[in-house]
Image 1 (tube, rainbow, N blue to C red):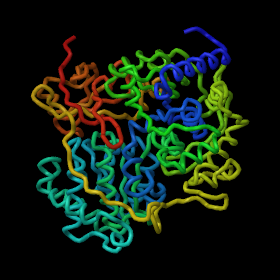
Image 2 (cartoon, one colour):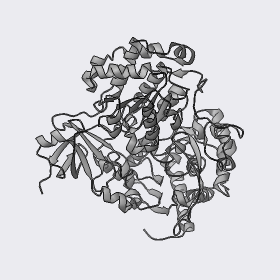
Image 3 (cartoon, helix red, strand yellow):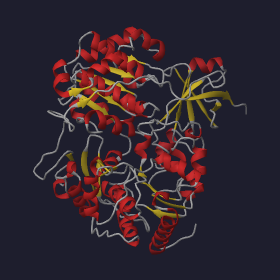
Image 4 (cartoon, helix red, strand yellow):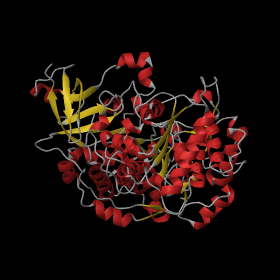
Length: 608
């Protein structure tokens, strides 16, 4: 790597991208946008891919977190986003929290949940680990990882059998109830107990607490979505909410908790291979014609590759060039040894980030980025709230806000991109995106606005689906349990679960550079059930080796009574012990998310 001017770097980037496009075709190129970038930057990267590079190969990290939410809720409700606001949770009478360590990972949401609890709301927490919120719950369900469809269907079974459904809501506002209820009959609490490990009486009680509540809400996070059956699990939760009429009212609805500060916005901006901004389908000739007219360019018709599919294509030589902005797939994507091989197979890799990462080390061109405090723009929060991002300090050195260099790169590729400011980009977004139609910087100066906000006199929408769904009626759909692709056996007897811990965030690119946070958790660790550890002669702090069919890592043992026997939990933050060296690339066929919560593993004490 040698230093270059911005002019040299962008000229070389444009030349390489154009050369690859001409020799191998536009589908040999791809773009991974950033959930840490602004709406404006994600929109421009999406536009760069489609209008300048002529490919729909554009995706981002939602493929590893809430792609099942977009797919399932989009199909069931017509909108793949949170249906209410956090403040609405405070007015719930019952809250079902699934696969979310909310107090540690989403403390703002947790504060509203705890307020509801103080009012007398019933809390039902479903999580294999006994989290702090599980300890405060009225009922804690500890399912075997990968069995969520089973026990959620069992709740629906009980709700139907006890006639806790909302018949009026079902008849007026939904389709598919009878088929879905019939499919759920196979999942009795007794049968569900055998598969999920949750006692049948607890399943019956959970169904009664949820079904009898006047206002019930469902909160979930990556413990639901990061499965090879993630889309079906989200659909099962939607079935539960719709069957009980818990939609479109204060204190009701479905609340997916997003991770990155703008992963919702990146999805909204069309950083996905099948939709433009506002989830407008690339398959619709009318929609495509609208964008072609606005962008003054012919656009590709063929759906693009997802993030994982792009890397597989790179591995086989079909994808030749890739732009990666603000993401670290070398560490964050499953089966990292395969990912590294794929990234090294590329003819050209352009990366942009605020710090060096395992991914930027492989780049042919590396561009210095500006962080959120060093640029202007907007973010969209997990509750659909579009808010201003204001520059507090200048970017260091030669770093630039991404919207500046993306615009310049588009011009060098022969596409018009004259944007004097992020405000002008948002104006273009609003003109093309009905749900953002009334959003602009002048209005945002007074505070955030929740989409849909279709016109400048619209106040924004706190609660979705109050009187109708975008497609008219909501859709219940039967979902059937499928065993995870890889289950424990005699050789690999443990279930390995991966995720975040309190003091670090994702691949540690930022938090491990923060001395106060790194001081709290400076070394990799794996959580082990205390009894399992005792039987293996493992003590607190011992070095252990965790191994799967993909690879192995060494970490410090942490003994936990809160973790069920037969389970291991490994944080994803440590490059010296990369959790994704162990995970597989089995994917959900509907949303193409990877299975990150269930891998068969074995454990050994390291003899020093």
